[in-house]
Image (tube, rainbow over all chains, first blue to last red):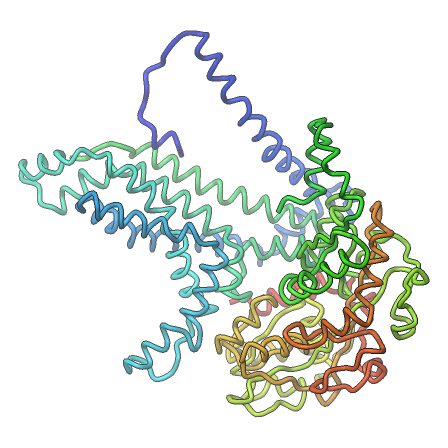
Length: 294
Length: 339
């Protein structure tokens, strides 16, 4: 992902500088091994136990999880939630990023602050704020009722629509920050050049701006997807428990019924399915990044 | 949150001997779990200062739900991340079966004679009682009479449902099942009936989200405990508790010493203080609304029972029978309720 954001750089220095770079990366590599790789291997190991007491080795937990068609629906719903959230954040975020480009530096700072502000609040607070907004007697329903648009409150909480609306706001900074970071580096003369060559504003957008901003767009999509598919609090508080996604299944198996092997299988299913989509997006990013189409 | 134990573990791992003298004061400390919310607020405000004052023990509270406590101790495998548990009956049985408690000697409690007989045993001591029934908004709905009313109009379209994740949720669904021919070990009739009315139900959520959903008017009738009702009422929410015709469910919250802790003596002093008249009296009124277990502390007037003895006649569920079935019930609930 990061690779899509960084420009290619010629190699510098000889063996000595490469050695120093290797040393600099060592603490991070050690932390990665200790805090990510080791627990992941442990997770894989636990998944190969059949019983909740973790005493019998076997493929029973895998067979049980993947032998239940309900779990395929849960995986599909989880990935679909990520895709829907990407669509809404791109739909709202991309025009906002374009507006950002045309603002004066002072207004850009104000907009950037507004974009970053939600990150300063805990996701729990933001999620509960959405209960107040979308509730039966919440702000949205009160306004619509007062305006006479509806005659009885809409059911917005505990629906996928409500969940996607709230995730759009919650995840928006993750889409906008990489997008703005890449788009700010675009040469403004490119747009003028495109116009001078007779391209309409729409053509300039789709053949110049969008392709060049693709690394930021892909990075934003990756972050939004990974974050929204694993957003346990938002999914359960806003969506309720009738909308079942993998994080809820993992929580129930790990902390309610204590069947850790099954929780491990569900966790690995989440990791693999999310990483597959992330890898696909990265591949798209590498294929399209930074190329202007005629 | 970085705890004393985390620091100790980190210091040991790094071989940082110079840090150890600074931790010596921890001898007079105790890490005890508490439930997030009212429990944490009350224990921080009342119990921790009193324990410091009377026994010079620094009480560090770790807010964790019962299930999370069991999960963390099991994960720690012999090195408990805290010294004392606070549990409901279901997780208590899981912990007993998992050998997660030190053997408890009730005779070490100076206040043993002040709590009803049977409230302390070889596993731990009851520190509070909970009564589960129905809560509703009296400004929007008439009072339901029993569990079966929840699935009828006008209540069903304003009902907030939770599953088997918590003690009160499990207890309530068992009681609903009993109204339709089910039993302690057969909740199928409740699930069948719930599925029939599901499109009408106002909310199906996680237990922790239900008070918030009630407060926001997303649902106007839920099954819950008296403490939640009293706490919401204290915040100005229109809510009343109903003891169902077939009876309310009572259960007890217990404290236990974690296996392998080196702070067992401090844990005894802590438990003894918790069940003392002073603490129980301080925890009973608003805003904490605990049900006391000390016989010298009268029960609040607005409760459905007048004494602890009366409460022993309430419905009690045998969690040793429930626990083995719970995983399958959760699975079934997920599938039946899923959109």
